[in-house]
Image (cartoon, rainbow, N blue to C red; front, top):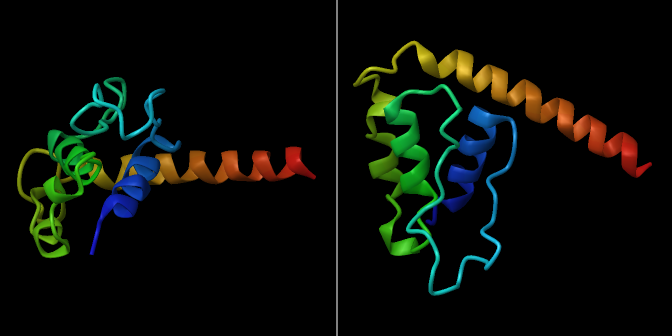
Length: 107
């Protein structure tokens, strides 16, 4: 199964917004290898690595579900053990607020 959607959800949970789509789309010759978290987002390097691997433009470069579940971000390895819950909580709250605002503006 392709995990692009999981990468989008992880990006949104950590930043409170959806990942940007490059102006030239995802199919151009000058596309990046993957989409990455903005540098101002305070998360561990494991979280950054996890998201960028899931948001690899080439589907064959993305991890499998089994590989993703063994990633250091999930297993508690690396530096970011305590940073995950706060970053996710903050990002999800911001995303929920933006969804409510968007809904109110559409009505």
